[in-house]
Amino acid sequence: MTLKEALDQAREGKRALGHFNISDIAAFRAIVRAAGELKVPILIGTSEGEAEFVDMDVAAAMVKDAREETGQDIFLNADHFRDLDKAKMAAKAGYDSIIYDGAKLSHEENTVKTKEAAIAIREINPNILVEGEIGYIGESSKLLDALPEGAQIDEGALPTVEEVKRYVDETGVDLIAPAVGNIHGKFKGAPNPDLKIDLIRGIRAATDVHIILHGGSGVSDEDFRAAIEAGVSAVHINTEIRIAWKKGMERALSDEEQIAPYKIFPEAEEAVYEVVLKRLKLFSGLV
Image 1 (cartoon, rainbow, N blue to C red):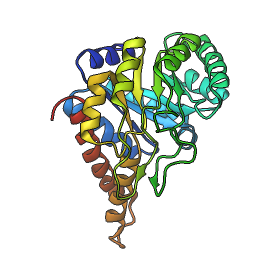
Image 2 (cartoon, rainbow, N blue to C red):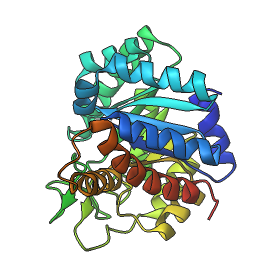
Image 3 (cartoon, rainbow, N blue to C red):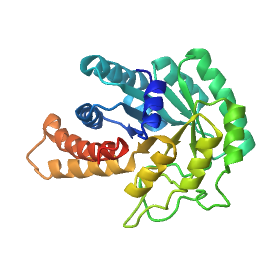
Image 4 (cartoon, one colour):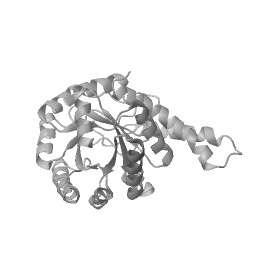
């Protein structure tokens, strides 16, 4: 199954693919294991920073090997690439999709640069899915004390249905990540803002490209269900699994005598697995 087919099937079934980022083997193993247990397709992402740490060719080889070994539908996404040269590197490495993120730019510049990126990426691989982002929602997957500076969550600041449609038509992207009240990161001790479900529904009615929800950490289960029902085809989660990874590592490192990495990392893997499994059940309509 191709990524496009997986997204089509998810949307038709009122489900969404889960997208989870990695920067080590523990998270990778956890994500693959959870998706395999539920028999659902999965998207694994690397940001520019994560891709530099893991290495794009290594990430692509890991996904290819896992596909062949397990028979699962595992896809690899270049997440929030802002450097076109690095996006081209991801296309050459064998990524299934690439997000060219110009959301912090003016609308006009974002449109021009995203179109240029889509053309350049497809010259390398015409089958790759290109995603564009409209509306700024912050950049870091971390615990937040305050709203990311410049993040657009208010009705007057969010892109309109007409603006999203024009952006999709002019850039030719396959996937769209609109700002719909979502933000990157997760507030400390408080829920994230509510999603604008009517806006999602309007975008879905206006354009046939798949809607991707970024900044999923901290979103309520009710909003997830409503967003998927309204037309979201995939959901990005990163902060939640980073928190789980850290807690798992802290538990393992509490044994001061343990120094073997292969005996420490399974705690992080298990913690990430539990979060991913819970989220995939929700996105797949299994709870």
